[in-house]
Image (cartoon, rainbow, N blue to C red; front, side):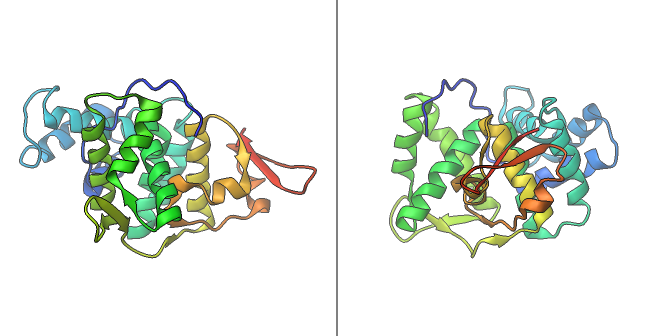
Length: 244
């Protein structure tokens, strides 16, 4: 991965899948953001300690808000489509939809997922020490780095895509890759392009390490009809995908 200037970590809490479901479900029903934040704040009362914005509960609410409730203009179309897909998505596909939203809104999560995916592909397991070392190269040796990495990994574990390996400090995948439909796969590659801010070969997107929990079903002909993406055939007959 090329070294980029890293600033705000953002994803600094362990987030449960149920909390993401609540935020997305209420948003899809047309509730306004202040109302949804109030519901989440009250729901978290007995789950996460704190009564202020700077407490654990306040910071957890901030992460949830940035994933689903107050996204940037560029992520808006992805969120609109994600909300539509959630209405008919089963459990595993719901994980994929939330994953797409987290990747698109939190570069820190994307980078951790990328390193986990690469290590799993190389060794069949990902070691926490290796993940931290690789993250330090791009995010710097911050005092909070190890703790925030753990929040990302604990979230992934709570979502059912990782669990502890036999070796101390290791993590392995919890299941065979989740098979995604074409519609969900398009969400995932759209999220990768948003996170990276540049186009990529379709083959690179389909096998992107940050999407390690999923097996993507993609069709170039269908992608050409996607309003948010632009697909071009290159001279070597490979397909290049970028944001429209």
